[in-house]
Length: 105
View 1 (cartoon, rainbow, N blue to C red):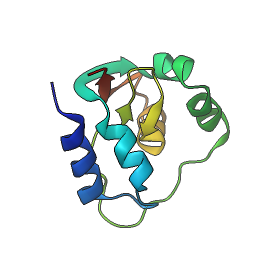
View 2 (view 1 turned 180 degrees about the vertical axis):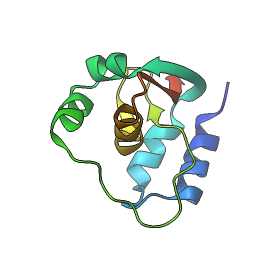
View 3 (view 1 turned 30 degrees about the vertical axis):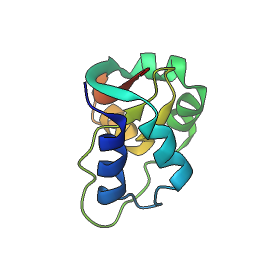
View 4 (view 1 turned 90 degrees about the horizontal axis):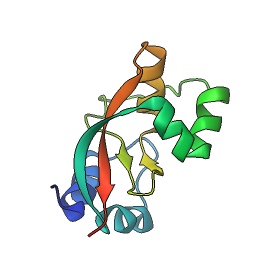
């Protein structure tokens, strides 16, 4: 079990090309996490916004160092962070992806 406060701190330090709001970091910190390999189709089923993104979006270009963190998924199946990383895995032919999966405290 990985504490949510640790995941939130790691996300804040690593950053993202669009930045993390305090609200989002607080949301991440509310749960604890396990590392799980999940099918991308399962993530799409639980997060309709991710499904729409993967159907319509082109892969966003990112400048800087690659983001070396698993996507963050809430215990309810919402992808909190990592749409682009999941998209890249899908384009690479992967059917699943490692994620930090929320576990209710």
